[in-house]
Length: 387
Image 1 (cartoon, rainbow, N blue to C red):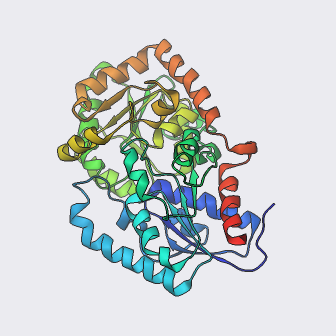
Image 2: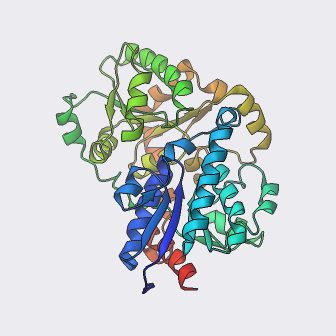
Image 3: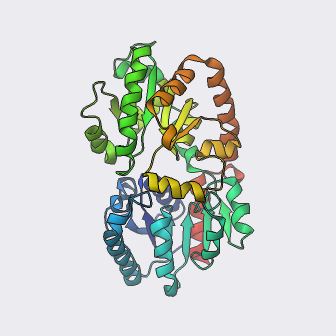
């Protein structure tokens, strides 16, 4: 066991909901090894619950898309200056940035002259976008912690010190829900099909996906009148989701409490989800899924020229094939989404094929020595302080 005897300060940054969840697990794991640690920086409610003293709201950084970020440049620049100034002032023992590479990597570069140990947690996906960008990384961090097994080899071949620590999805309870409890609590008939809708939580995502989801549900309801659409979301995004469904003739059930979400996963017959970590959550819970996404058309044109991998969904990248159907951009269309979801709701063979693949993929994500991924990450960070 690694421990640090004296009181130390760790400065943390998370810029979106998934990073907040990851950061909360990391703080809890760090405190497991050293209860005296102090945590300062930027995060969301989950990190605050674990004792993070927050500098400014994490939501200010939750912007995605090349076009979508333009109106936010001035605000993001001010937030970057605030973060740098605080780090200069308090001189933490280590700075840990979690994902959000657009902001995190700029911050790491700005604080490089301070000679404070820097750890970046969640590798930038340059293996997907543009491998040549990796040339800009030497000197940005002292240690990179990656979540995916193939990333360690990728970054190591570029001379970057990288450690695979396992994927935090394995520490969640998403696969321990109770289907009967969910149906009873929400008065859903035993045979009524449940469809999870997972449009994401960012302000830039909801307006693009929700209108398509609305039309998809209307089409599905014609074939499955007793279909129950359910939207699991975070407490932070609940109000935004409610705003986006205010004119829906068929109102989905919105849930935001963790246990309710896990129970929904257990009860669900299928899911329509954006690409991202949600595909791994669903895979762990064995929920058959279709993956969709839509961005600004200009962003899409640029992205298609840059993307170097055959799939967008993480579950498909890890599986090495299209385990879950991907319907992106122009294929993010109500008729196509409806047909794909109907296949999952009516074809047991399609469901079994996905679920068998999920089991194999989840095994790949286990941390070294079968320890919890957050503990593996915490020990790597504590070794930086000790060194």
